[in-house]
Length: 293
Image (cartoon, rainbow, N blue to C red; front, side, top):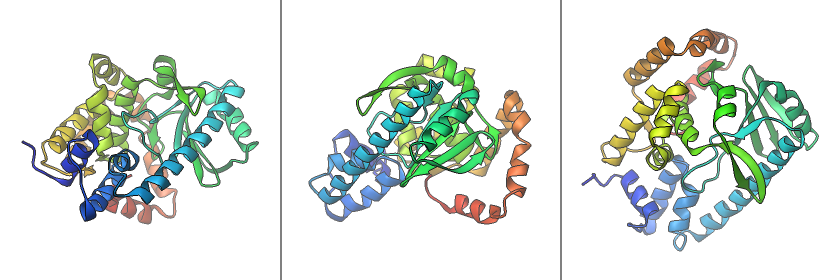
């Protein structure tokens, strides 16, 4: 039997086999929030945290309305796009909307969103971030961090897009199998942190197709690392969020450098990113100290 960590109690609550009460319910709500599972958790314990559930449901409706408007804009301009890190086994409320957009379609997508009141707040080599009234949209041409590309966005757009529904509108999003690969790559290569939500994606949607796709997209090592950490979380050996040790990070990044020519070619950009920003020290310290992402 797994050790009864707070993560295990959270998981059992989500599965309906455990009901926390009182102070424990509030404490597990914080754990759920760190793991991007607050809405699903509150729906399970709503009788104990009614005010929090009402607030989170309102946030969910607000997020989906805004997401639907972004989808409408992208559809109207004929952009090749896919909602990215969007589909999850449980309903959740993201801090921002991530969208893969073909390189050639980014200018008109930005222009169209600006006509709806969005303002560009960050423009980087592979990402444009826009915001309006607290709602943030990240347009990615390729999944990347520190200006380093760790997955081919154009390949994702060509191989792995399905139709989904967002607030009553038809939208395009990555397939579940692609989301397995993307979640693993994002958690391992970019954030160096595994959330329980990442594990739920892997546990629910990993199949032969997902394993093959992860390998094809250069995320095979990342998925192996993610599943290993998730086994430890599921066994109660570690809590989630789980920060990866430097040895694990070094190993997976070294493997990525050897196997992925695009990652290797853009790795030099990380130096430009680090030394070209005046706040790099504060940002690196914040990244090291934070428990989640």
